[in-house]
Amino acid sequence: MNQETVRVLWNSIECSGYFRMGLSASDAYARAKAGQFVMIRFCEGLSPFLRRPFSIHRLIHKGGSIQGFEILYKVVGEGTEKLSLCRKGERLDALGPLGNHFRLPGKSCRIFIAAGGIGVAPMYFLTESLLHQGRGLHECTVFIGGRSKDDLLCLNDFFSAGVETVHISTDDGSAGSCELVTGPLQRYIEKNRPDRIYACGPLPMLKAVADMAIPYQIPCQVSVETVMACGMGACLGCAVQDKNDETRYLHACKDGPVFDVRKIDL
Ligand SMILES: Cc1cc2nc3c(=O)[nH]c(=O)nc-3n(C[C@H](O)[C@H](O)[C@H](O)COP(=O)(O)OP(=O)(O)OC[C@H]3O[C@@H](n4cnc5c(N)ncnc54)[C@H](O)[C@@H]3O)c2cc1C
Ligand code: FES
Image 1 (cartoon, rainbow, N blue to C red):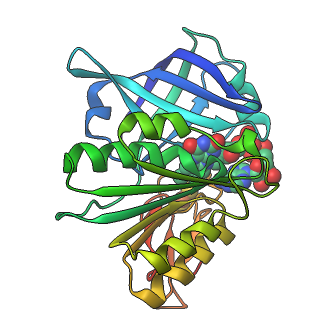
Image 2 (cartoon, rainbow, N blue to C red):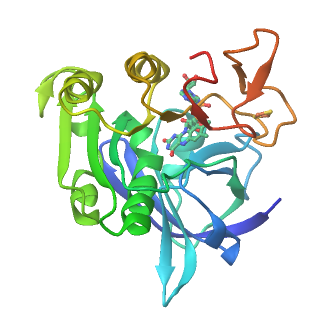
């Protein structure tokens, strides 16, 4: 278990209500994989008392080694509000990298990556890993959805990483097509069936993605962002129902946060 004090390298506003924070960290993060997360606590003050989980958005490289990692976050309550006020040089207490990770395909694949709202946070690291690992082996198509144009994050980052097609949709039609992210995903699955789907976003979105993938027998992994208290399998606060055994619960923090959609009841 790696617990350390990390320092804020930058904490910049991405767009209204969303921030990007770079944190310097030890080379324990060199082994971090896409889908893993960190539990962050403030060094100053007791509030909020519990750590808050954030996906590793990407690793920060400097001179061939790992300088730290970046998180992308949305301000929703006390902890993220306090985080948004952090300045460069401030210290935070981080536990990580935690949890399992997305499993990458061994052979050339057509891959669909779907992200809803702040669910895009782990998907950039995943896309980078797929493109880096594959070096042209995989064909990645990204689907990003948000409530409005202000909730569409990282579009240019995906293009810069080498993704050729990024579909955007918004609930209010202010950018891209006026529909849920599952709309274009469904049409593309019917037109050009992928070998794999990866998704992260609100639970109803993940359920809809699973309902598309399972009938077509498309391998599909989702990252679930349940409420978490300890992040280490000790409090049972992040229970996810095992789909194949109704008496059994899995821990999103230890068994997940990434699950095969055939294994959990969404
Ligand atoms: C594995 C994992 C990875 C995550 N990665 C990210 C990330 O990269 N970026 C990011 O912005 N957020 C991420 N989250 C969600 C993030 O942890 C919560 O938004 C954060 O803990 C809220 O803290 P708060 O003190 O600001 O809000 P609180 O005061 O604790 O809660 C404010 C509101 O947000 C709701 N809320 C709290 N936690 C969650 C949650 N997990 N999902 C949905 N609603 C929640 C509460 O029910 C409440 O309505 C992740 C969660 C998990 C479990
Ligand atoms: S968050 Fe405590 S068991 Fe998962």
